[in-house]
Image 1 (tube, rainbow, N blue to C red):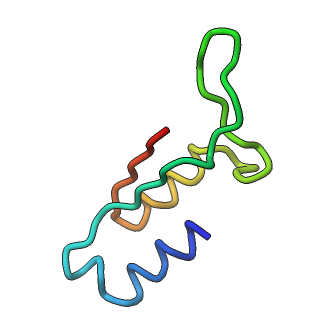
Image 2 (cartoon, rainbow, N blue to C red; image 1 turned 180 degrees about the horizontal axis):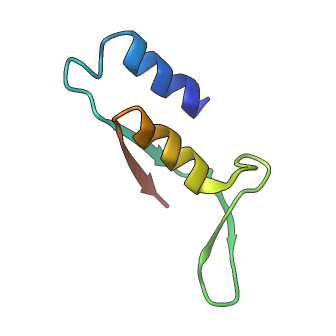
Amino acid sequence: MIQDTVDTIIDSGLAAAGYEYINLDDCWQIDRDANGTIQVDPIAFPNGMRALVDYVHSHGLKFGLYS
């Protein structure tokens, strides 16, 4: 869904109009490990967060992540 959103922002001309951020808020994490580090949901993001961020950046957009 997020990759489709990136594609729509590019294809619709919104990026050219100045929209530059993709922000993901909540529902991406499942828990924290023993050190307190947030763990990415492996079902929702089977390739990890890095692959998603790389996709966003490869289209010239910026990525924001909230927890």
